[in-house]
Amino acid sequence: MTVRPIRYLGDPVLRRPAKKVRRVDDSIRKLIVDMTESMIEAQGVGIAAPQIGVSLRIVVIGMPDEEPYALINPVVVRRSGERRLDEGCLSLPGYRGNLSRSVRVTVKALNEHGKEIRVKADDDLLAQALEHETDHVNGIVYVDRLDSKGDLVKLDAPFVRSAALDGEASPAGRSSESDA
Ligand code: NI
Image (tube, rainbow, N blue to C red):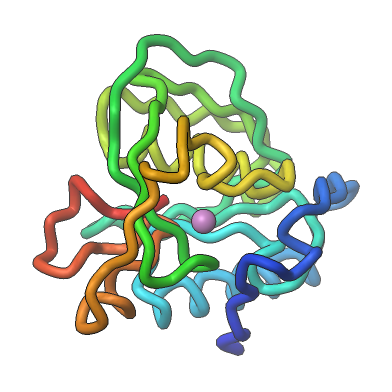
């Protein structure tokens, strides 16, 4: 297990549409372990492979009090509804943005054994994380989805570390504002 450094906005790897995983083998499972460790270390609730510098379509979801799991080649196959949310990202520490996300989200993906799975979420942190992380493998960062620059807020210094998104738990543990 290796905690790998998080890549920050400005790094081209975050803007590149990531490559599809052709075969789910041990090297992919090893990468998933590293992604999971890196996510936990950074106190995130989700992470995408490009965020540790690997341009592959893999995300790890780590909802509070749940075992983290991987989604390989994730595709949003269904989304509906609209809600306003605060969001942050591990790749943009110290900032949060207010943006529109879907209420209900269904993602189709492969699990770490190469089996097709579907994950459904409804009006919760998971729904937000699924959209946020799937965006990452498409080279999209949440700031791209803001209506205006005024919707991006710089947090006070003491909050910087804990407030980075990627589904991290926010400062006072208000999980509803966690990043995906
Ligand atoms: Ni992120």
